Image (cartoon, rainbow over all chains, first blue to last red; front, side, top):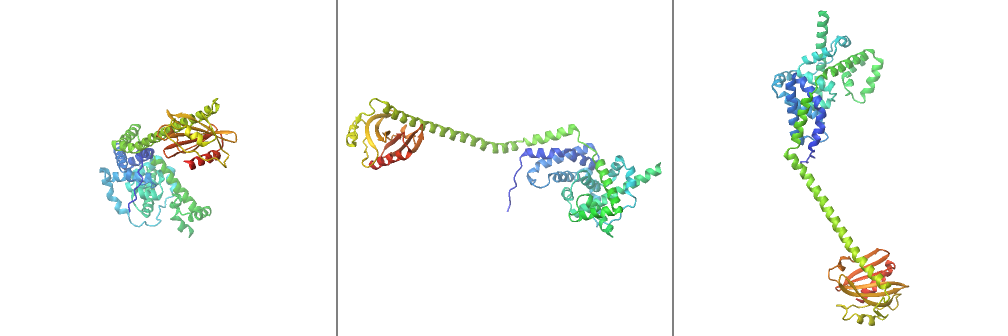
Length: 181
Length: 251
């Protein structure tokens, strides 16, 4: 039997969504790597969210819901369509703890903010976004699963890969830097 | 051995996702295992540098304004306005209705008090008068006929033998430009007035049946056979009730 959901007053949407603007914008900019595109994406997200707000169920995670709308909008955008191809390939079983042998502390000595930023930017979008949701937004695995529409198991394996890939990027940069000197 | 089992869980630990049963055990392990402890530290550093580097972009003030405006405009769309009314209209109606009821109740109370005061005035005025009664008699068979021709109705008076009440006499009274009978009874030196008017739905009818006590008078009234009876005096409710009962029995 259908149980009617309590409809939220429109002012609630404003109160809930506006504090997320910077977070959403930051995420959008990381996805699109372009200010104008990021702004369009965020605007589209707000418009869609406002229209769909009546279907948003009280008690579920509003932030994850907003990020999910933003990400889905991104995936169907022009620059998003280019990146979707690579996502399918990595959904294999996580290959155990084959960690990079380079001690991370050594990497991080040189890895200042700019280096990490560059390394993040070079990651494939699906690895970049999960790192951002986990480390920058400090979302729980549950929230990430909601935002990305993937099972929690995939959240864990993808996070593992993303960290590994970032470490790889940092190692390259570190070696490159050392050779460069 | 222990390190191998834990190494897979270090990320979970740092992400705050390790189960509550595992977390204390891993904490204990980290205190004794330098290897794992340094790996946790490195992972933590990486997490922190991603967090710092990841907070890179901010919405410009113009863009923030644009979003705020677009939400505000949509929120105040006709549909939203309609919903707003849906909530406000019943609320306003409820307020108006309750004010109306309150006003009505107050007006009724005021009318009631007006009739009550008038009867109390008649009662006090009669007692203060040099001639409290026009017909002085303790005999109901004398008092009742005296009213004939003076008021447009007739009534019966109770037999008082065996009670503490005595009939003092009667006089004409007017309430709302209507003539009626005022009978004065005595009970232990207290005077009680009994007013009898025709029930014509006028001023007298505004006083609902029942007992009222105010200004140290007790009043009881009822309607019987088209006559509105009022019993008022400075005695207790029980005495007023006793006299009312006698009158009702006589009617």
